[in-house]
Image (cartoon, rainbow, N blue to C red; front, top):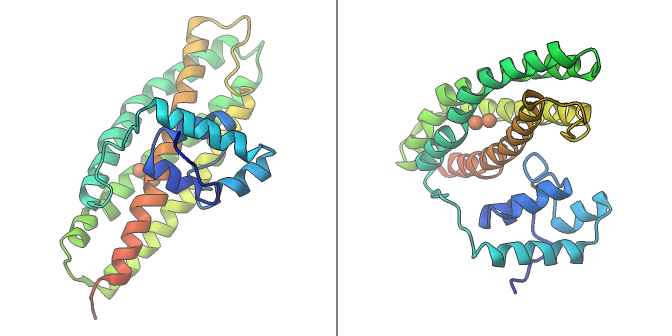
Length: 240
Ligand SMILES: [Fe+2]
Ligand SMILES: [Fe+2]
């Protein structure tokens, strides 16, 4: 069976084998914004037995037959394209559809489940923030990563702008993760109430999928793409 080193970071384990994310999600371990913590530390803070978690990760990895990432990590332009195809396009399609469902469910069930009004408010804010965020990533950051791949020179101003953009995007990610966590708390971890209609169930399933997809999306950006951009910026020859 595969040996899992508990001193590795959560982000590096997911980077090597994306299936680890399933196990981390089910245990409530934050591998995206908190991806820099080691597995041992995360387990200790979460009150989990690290040996059991290592066994579970190894088992899952063996069963999935070394399920590899479907993107080329070291080509920044490919990775940025992958993020747009796999995550931004999904958000552009899903966010407005789910917005209609969240509103309908709050209108129909809000009296019996008053927390649905808060879910609706949080979700509306989330949509506004995410839409602006993905547009900005595609306008300000992704076009430049190709230049870095090709080793093109960047001006001091361009480098500063990129570093500032990445800092802002990372702050956005934390805010988004917090908002999704509030929605998960409001719905008691997407628990389906006895009186839930099909739309209510569908809303909960789709909100859960949105949270999981966002964790993977943020992991690819914070822990892989942005880190690689930082490394290339540090190494790039800079024009003054
Ligand atoms: Fe993104
Ligand atoms: Fe992002």
